[in-house]
Length: 118
Image (cartoon, rainbow, N blue to C red):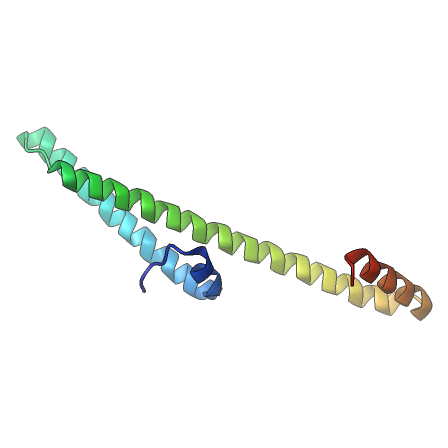
């Protein structure tokens, strides 16, 4: 799955797709770190240093993929928080409707709508 840097593109993905993308990015990050470690070991043991352009590219990729991984994690956390909030609010309304007299419930509901600007 190609990785988009556009947050709007990430918003369109389902949570499962985001998790899949995050796992792919984490795999890429692991591979990059392994390549960096191998290059550093080769430099220590053989005195053979990697090309400076390679270092620039690999560090850029590491930072970019790390940032994308963080963006996905933040989006997943926001979605989970919103789902919990929506669930609690929905349950509250259901309980209030069941336990309050209809006049009192409707009065509170109307006040809430006015407060929300609806």
